[in-house]
Figure 1 (cartoon, rainbow, N blue to C red):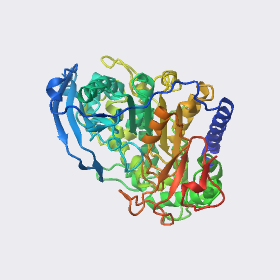
Figure 2 (cartoon, rainbow, N blue to C red):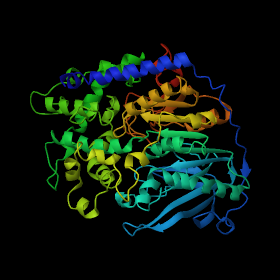
Figure 3 (cartoon, rainbow, N blue to C red):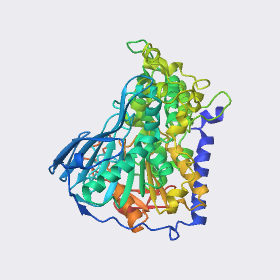
Figure 4 (cartoon, rainbow, N blue to C red):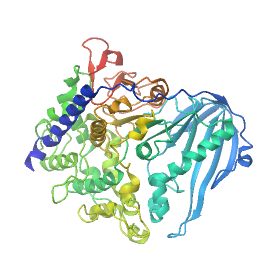
Length: 580
């Protein structure tokens, strides 16, 4: 145990380095040629033929179109970003309307689909995040932070849905079918409907279909790659929560660890987790990570690209000053170090078995988004999700609301409650683990063999879904496919980035266009250029270091390669770095 806690979890560090080395060896031996795989033809454009008449002219099974209207070209604002979108037809509707047999609530799969007048022949299923429950505007803004060219702007027909329940609250977990819809069945139900609706609007079905999202949307994409490989030609999964039940229960476990070093309580008398590690203390740790690891990629630029090497180089115990007196932001206590070492190593049960993958030390842990997932989410989003969606049987509303959410988190047992994610109890006949995760996740032969492609990205400083877990999945996928998984699937790690965006990172990028080029032109992406969101950006990132150029760019490399400085050239430019 002292080994694990005393040296920034070196056992885990060794596994990171080993997995990267194995992946590099497999790629080197197996090659990455996709010459033997089918080449899918390029989509061809078509004009919109009808809009207002769609509601009355289409007879789609179990579907009620509630409106269809032309939207003129102009601005749409979503999450603080205003995007100029082309003229399009906005169709809204519901599928599978019913009354829940357990709770008596009304359920349906709500959706909207935006059909541009000038269509590029492609369909994008925009998988949404969180608990779903809202039909987010179908713009296809799924690549990195504040995208500058969402899918609708690129000419895609874009679908968005609420995944089978009408509110972003966890209580739908009482309904057995709503659980399955949230897990995977809504995607399977919506896909043929959307393709038929598109055919009615344009006179032809989409030539190429894509499924994309981040967070839970990334999970939807990962599940789709496994369950619906025959329906999608390209999969884009960002910060994917493909092991979401384990990650959510780990959030409750994290709260229990932070409670050990919390120094204040909230109004309900519960531990105030924000007092466990303050923003100043996370900033201190982040600065020490930079000091130790910045130069490992060949240049001192305030950015850590070589994450695997950093895990071996950075030592939480010795590289961060230990407080001998009061905590003032210039040190952290021995107790805090013990808690943080445990959290970054990941939870284990009383038998020493790992219950969820640990994560990496990265400067992005100083990001506000990282802290919000560690401190704010356990008592709110995660407690509710675990109580109603990720355990069988679910809690009752009365029992859950009788105590504060933080108390639920602190009461949660990794010994007796954690196994409930694998349980089935009538009428919940499929376990949360089964309906939430991709079956046979390391075998994507169906996707591969039909010529479809997959791109995955993950922020190295994600506060909820472990990027190490995603990297290890990529290792398993590569091994299972004879060392040549990069012929159809590639992972891009984003140094410094928090959950889907934010942190000291070049977090603005477009992976959809490279995915289309790979699927339809055979142009496999060796890297993707990412930009910092400094002054002048469509949404400025306030967490960028002052020493960075407002327009810094970096290549995001295919895992396990790392962006390394070429030895000369502008350190603010991606062209001065190569993936090695």
